[in-house]
Image 1: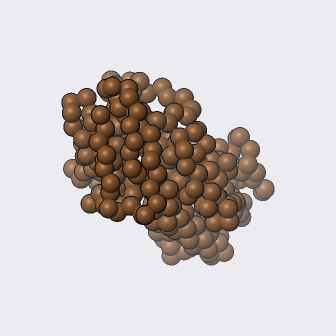
Image 2 (image 1 turned 30 degrees about the horizontal axis):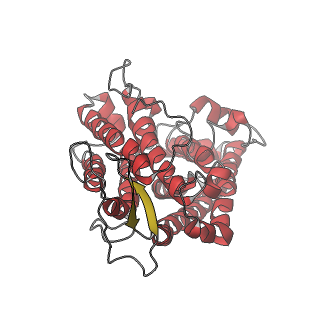
Image 3 (image 1 turned 135 degrees about the vertical axis):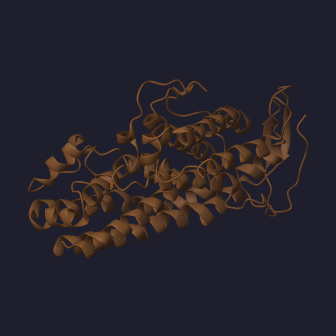
Length: 371
């Protein structure tokens, strides 16, 4: 039977929430203020992440405009540095674009559908008025297209800058990409600030359109894509870890800038920050403290909240042994990258199913990873 716990960190208004004991199937009552959790996550994680990405995006647009106006190596270096800042900020904002306004505007798909296809990027760069809203543009827009345009396409910064100096359509494409990024994200932040934030904080319940289910699905799908898109596909493995052939560095995120490792680490840290409510001490309203209140145990009798925290931390820790970037790691034995995949898979297997059961919410979408 789940014990009654009252967390001193909670606000004065507490909801008596129904939970199900996984062994007995009996219902019990757990004191936990889920609205306080939504409010904390929104104020301390979601809104700061969305606003920071918008801020970095504004600066990126300015640096791209500067490069288009004056295509020289100094302007290119500034644009490259700002691209990295923007891409890192996206790793923090991405989880919160998987529901609500971000989902409605397809922000994840529009902003970071990687990898870009060099041939398609070059084709768009030669057009006078490229339309980035078509299906044909899905592999030639967003941050991945800029990864190629700013870091690839030439063997040196001087050569890349010369490509812009010699092509007005290439310069215009840079600016069109910046405008498309703005158009893809500005409505997301605006809707959060204007109306969705207040709704999100009070939208309690376990239904598929309520905040608990939205957050749970966003968190688990973020972890799924972190494992699958940022690591496993490049290693060319099945979810069970069986090799499908030679490694595929071309499938990495940011293969031209070689920032794949840093971006994946930021996304991994974002997952841990979210789970803990941005407080590793476990003293704020979060998924972690909610699971503590539910007194959820693993099959082996361990505290599920602590097990999940350890698994997520192990993923972040697994990045440290990787020397250099993922592209280099893949060209060698890829042993350290394989260790990251193993920790990610362990986290997904041990956390995802139990999390949905513990919270009493349903998975959305299609899950084919076998866990």
